[in-house]
Image (cartoon, rainbow, N blue to C red; front, side, top):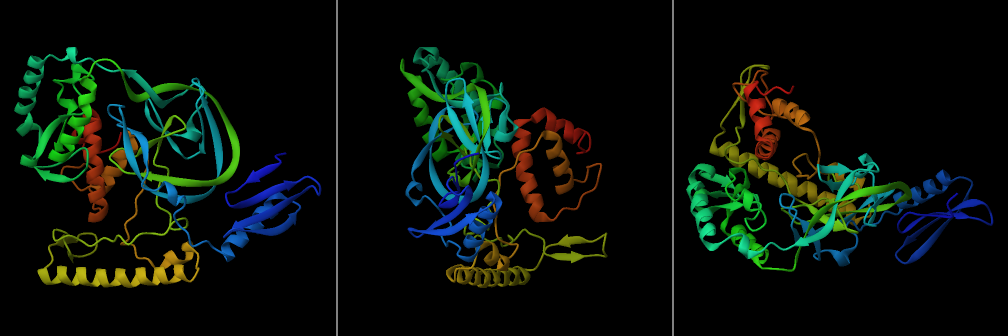
Length: 420
């Protein structure tokens, strides 16, 4: 039996002398002793009851590390970079695993924490001894002699010739995800020429980037062209051990994009949380208001109706009504939090128009099934009539998928957008 099981700022402790479980909670510098209990479950229940009756109003934890930077990795090139920490929040008590790699690196994390592997993201609970994970490492820096100036000029000319064909009139910068007109975008080599000359004339290695991102990325790649020294990048490392390692309160770390990962104890892990939870953090006032191209008026009988454009007056009415309702609801939410009401109770007044963010994983077949239901195409074998808001999400997902798996996406289109 474990002598001690911690749970953040409080928890349960095995009291050897009495052979009972002791419950206690630390709050505002004071330790609240909640007595001795015959079972661990009773002690945990006492801690949970105390927390529910005396909830903490802090939603973001570890304030000292916010706005600091962590090591992150470009998931296309595996080159190392830096990302700013934008938020840290408590995620509750979870079962932990301890992973050990062949190089001696160790990571304690929850079973649902995503870890980067050579085959993509996998949850820690899905890994087994013998699998590989990506860890921080170094490699010899490529030499400038590998790409002569004349060849560089030729690559530049060839790249410029592909510009109008590979960049749409309105397209998305693959680095910052913002939309720009074609004239504001450049074709960028995702894997730098200095890192892999074999991909210099590969169209699949070209992606549109806005001027600012292209300049910043090009500047960072200059270091790759210098002789000698080493570069930092992610490398595969064999998992040699996985054991359960108790339960503790866990924290979710969110970092700035475009690559939402960071190096934890030498192992590359994902932004921790799957979805924002109103139980563990204070939700932010970011709400949805339909754009002018959102069709507002429903016509026809049930089962055969269609949506048509709204009038300018209807759009003004929708925008005004939603904004006033959102402001009122969020003020009442803040009022309850200020009064010490638990977040999971206070959030009940917030409307469905509140934006949320999440991370999810799926295989190609599951994604195809989702897209067939949540996008409308006249040529689809199975008709679908999704709500426009979820369709907009699905369209962005499909754009990314088509870029990552063009052959599979083409087969999906060819066979009537039906999952196999």
